[in-house]
Amino acid sequence: MSNNKRLNLKNRKLGILFIASVLIFVGISPVLKRNPINWGILFYSKQGSAYLSKNVKIENLTSDMLILAVKNGVCWTSRGNTLFVSLDEGKRWEKRCVLPYATMSLSYLKRFSVIRNLFDKPGIDKLMVLGSKTILAFSGKYLWRSVDNGSFFQLVHTTGYPPLLQGWTKGDKEIFYGEYPWKTSEHQEVNIWKSIDDGKSWFITYTFPAGSIRHIHAVQYDPYTHRIWVATGDEDAECRIMYSEDGAKTFKTIGQGTQESRAVSLIFTKDFIYWGTDCPYKQNYIFRWDRKTRKRQEVQKINGPAYYSTKLRDGSLVLATTVEGGIGESDTSAHLWFKESNSENWEDIGSWKKISGIKSHGLLRLAQPNESLHIYLTPWYTEGHGSIFELRINKDRYIDR
Image 1 (cartoon, rainbow, N blue to C red):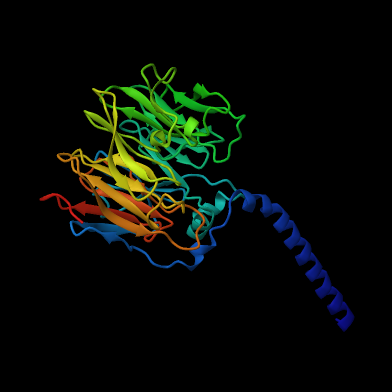
Image 2 (image 1 turned 90 degrees about the horizontal axis):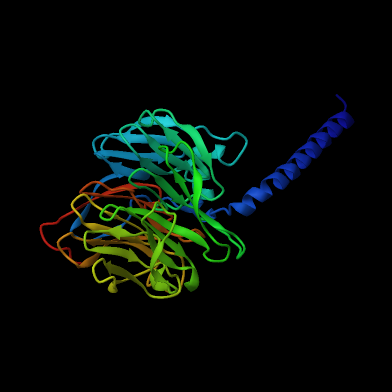
């Protein structure tokens, strides 16, 4: 082959490569615009780091796995769209199934941990155990249903706005979830969806008028009164804590109009309802609402906005704070707060420092539900990112710092 032919072939290859690069860039630009990259995660290597109270110890630590639920003695976790189960509280794990990935899309790439981290796309991120064999699971906007205890899932519903971690719940006979639009205009309606056939089909049961709220934070079932509770945000007029006694058709409000009623999750006890406030620009607190007096009381100052919370099998309460970077935060760590069932004393029992260079919030995802004597959580964009911590608490005496 002559030198001129070689040169022409080389130039042709370079031209094809250039055109292909432009087409790829044009094609992926909308994806990158919708899904900003967290470059800081590329340079993060520490795993399993945390500052814990002297009365708390790590019982088990599992890397590259997201905690979902601990129910009936079974732990459910995910890695991308792969579902895992443990029958011995996290000592041994077995793969249960893999949900289908959409081909030629970002969701397909969620099988790789680096992609999940870079784009904040964890895969299966919410799971609900309905009965002996029925399980529901959200992977992004897709809702899947299994009738064989998680061995096979069928796609049953697709939503434009999936719920937050505690934004869906099972009532006595019905299932609910609330939409959480990330970016909304004042002209957008926000809906609560319901299923009355074990998650097979879904319909809208309640609509917040356009401009009344930004999004729904929580939809939760109160086992003491059988009510469905809903929390919304974010501006003062959009913040509401309310309940329904007729299957989310109508609501009564217990708090509205201030950041004190801005909650992402609620905890129910026999006498009180607890929540942490979710305000990035003010001091945050844990509040409790007295069921008898119907009055709200501030019970504990906390270091930052509170997202997720849960109740352990013995009645102890757990609440986690988040690092958003707002002026209402006292440090750059996500903290874990704990209250024993026989005490009204809340204690800061652990903290995970946010990874620098990450735009996304640093938070602690708690198992939902957490029907165990131990605490199960996955730090996200903090020290220990993407790992499962099983924390054992020494309850022989009250926890102190």
